[in-house]
Structure formats: structure tokens, C-alpha cells
Length: 558
Image 1 (cartoon, rainbow, N blue to C red):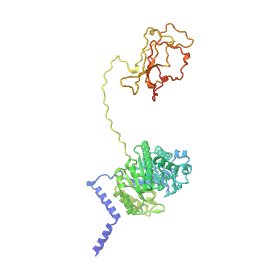
Image 2: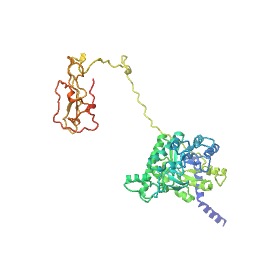
Image 3: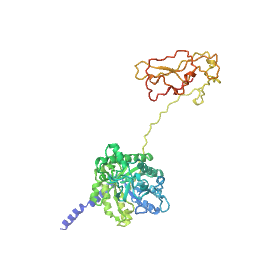
Image 4: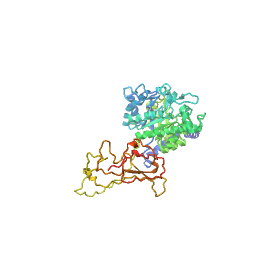
């Protein structure tokens, strides 16, 4: 009888999901600690926590922050996500927000410090990564300076209303399809990377747009231009959903490139909702972002009130596929100020995530052990049992390709009488002072033969092969033997033949007046030595593009 009762109790105990997870983790730890199976635990396992300014002042108080970072390090956490963009305001000294006129204050800690600088210094000293968290993304309260001053940036529903209900209350949304909105958000990200030694950037489920929005005039006109259709009345129409989701994906791609250009090994992290909810409800096609290598880390928020639903979500195929490609974690709610969660339930979720090879991140720091039904000491002991060994995370270093060593070429000896290039002086040329090119010839050239005509021969397109159709005309701006006014002629002047240039027939337009051409009556005709050849049977063509005009050509000068 006693044995039967014991057997039934043991079978019911074995059916406990928590016990199954605990035993699986326990025996895995035992095996890993055995010399036969000894190897280091996964180094990329995410053990993170969000640091917010809602319901807590830990981030603003230097002593509290120092204690928090020390405790996280002791309990083998490796990543912190401090909020830097919340409710339409930058929680750091932002020149961009100030220039936009949306920041009426400078965010400082209780001791006058810059909270983000203080956090980064303390976290890096303990070996923790810091990824600033742009919590609100495209979302903002209707009462914020951002929403009031830049109302044209907001999008709307089909009925014209702009607000939606979120965990932060009633909010409005910046239109993520407008270039000026994209530029604004990107500039804030790059500003943080310029000001601080961060290890990456994180956005969450607000790097998105509720699918009921997108009926503002700008988006409607853009959709009409690209599809020749009006947006469907149903906001969940598949084609309408995909068009908007693809637009958001295009922006994520540009944002990723901007982050990598600033710091090539920075982590671009996104913490979305489970994929079905993210895509259908917020146009956030994050699984596609993973497949396109647009993000470096995914932490899926699975804030489910029961373990069975939680496990179904973490076992989804898209999460398994993502885990094979990039570091992946599960966001676990550890409680709120007015909603405390027991540690046993948190343990069950952590064990389920670890059993599926996933990391974890907790929302939020103070609910780990400060806002909890158990004592702080007990909670910390249980977290240490979940993470008994360190899991160090480091930014990946970019491996530069090894270049081959250059071959050393033996240089022959240089003769002693060789002049160095930098010591070389050009040969002197004979100068002719007071030389008049219209009526005088240098003495050394008086008995020289007339110079040959310089010609530029350009084949005529569409001409018969092996035949060159050309026309020779004198260069207007270089008329030899033309004496200037009030200059007596020189009897010894030897007339030179006119310089000529041969150009394609299609560029020659007969009988057109050239700009700055003197009147025919005022020209004293020259007497060239030879007859100017001229093709009287040419057919004029239109001037091809980029062909220089005759008057812009400069004659060759020896």
C-alpha cells in the first residue's frame, strides 16, 4: 500500500514540467562538468537586462547604479540595455534634439552626472556589454514636443485618427516611410555612437508601425504612385501589409549600413514580439531581417502568463532558425512595481529557454530582486543557480585579409654620371622678345620652309568603310598674315599657310554665323600659299553631343 502511494506520487512528480526542465538542466550540467565531456559553455549566450527610467531611479543614482552593475557581474550577467530614447525625448545630452526644438531639458543624474557615461564606465570595467536602447522607436506621446512641433510627420488610421493604445498609454506614431523621419531617427543613433563608447544599438517592438496606420496622405500617394491603386480599406490586406513591411525593411537595411559604417563590429540588436504578432500587427518582418543579415541579435519578447504558451512560442521554427544564424534570446518579464512575479515561474521560463539553446534578457532590472515577493538574497541565490558559470561576450573583431609579402626587386647600380630625375633641368628654349606674329618672323625661321598644316582627322560615322569623309576649314581665331591696325607691313614677311583642322562632316554646318566673327567687309583676306581643299558635295548633319565647337578649339602652339 505504501509502495503504491509512493509510486503514484513519484509518477505525478515526474509529470511536472518544472521538474523535467530542472532534471534536464541538472544532468546536462553534471555531464558538462565531467572530464569526458568537459568543454567551455557557449560564449555567445545572452544574459541581459533592461535598465529603464520608469518606476525606478537606479540609472540616475550613482551609488545604486554601481551596486547594480556589481551584482549583475557577480551573478554572471553579460549585457545591459539602458534606455536612451523614451517618450519623444533623448535621455542624454543631444544636440540634435535641441536643434529640432523638442528637448526643453538636459537629462542628468542625481549627482549631476551623465547617466550613460557613468553606466558605460562601470559596465565595461566589469566586462559587460552596453547596447543603448531606443525604447520608443517611432512612437511618441501626443503631448510631447516632438508630436506637437512635427505634426506633419505623424501617420493616421483610415478614419483620420492618429492615436493607438499601447503599454505606455495613448500614443501617436511617426511615419517610418517619410525620409525626414528616417533621417531623424538615424541621426539620433549615430549621435549616440559618436558620443559614447557603446558596443551596439538596440530597438524593440516599436521599430515598427501598427498595421492599422499608414492612411496618411503621404503614404497613400506613395502607394498610388508605385501600385497605381488605392490602399485597401482592410488594413490587414496581404498586399497592403507586405508593401508597408517591405518599406520598413528597406529602412532597417539603411539603418544597419549606417551603424556598421560608424563601427563595423557594433551589434545591431532588435527585440520584437513573436513573429506572427510582429508582422501582422506591427509590420515588423524581423525573420526576413535575419535572413537578409540586417540584424546581429534577436531577443523575442515572450511575456506569456503561463508556461505552456511560453514554451510553444520559444519552440517556433523561426526562432530555431534564427538561433542557428545569430545570437538569440528570449525576453522574460520578471515583474513590475505593481505586478510582482514569483521566482519559481521565472526559473521555469529560463530553463525552457536554455533547453532550446536560447539566451535570456529580463525586463527590468529592479524587478529581478528589488520588486519581488521573495527576499533579495533568496532571489539572487536562485539567479546564481541558473547562471553558475560566466558567459563572456565580446565584440567580434574584423579579420583583415593577410596580404602577400611584396617581392623585392633588385635594382641595378646607377652609373655615376646619371642625372637624378629631381635634379633634371629642361633644355633652355630661345626667347623672341618684341616678336609680332602678324608681320614678323624670327631670324632663325626666315629661311625656313612653311610649316605643314596641322590636321585633326575624325572618321565620319556611318561612312563607307575604308573611306574618310572630311572637310578642311581654317581656324577662325588664328588667321595668319593678318596685320593689326596702324601697323606698317614688313616687306620681309613670309606669308604662312593657314592652320587647318579637319573635323567630321556631321559637325560642319555651312552658312552659319559664328559668334564674335568680324564682319566680312572689315576683313583683309589672307593669301595662303596653297589652295584650300573643300568638299563641295558634303551633306551637313546635326552636331553630335559633346562635340566641341570650332570656336572653342585652340590651335596647336609649338
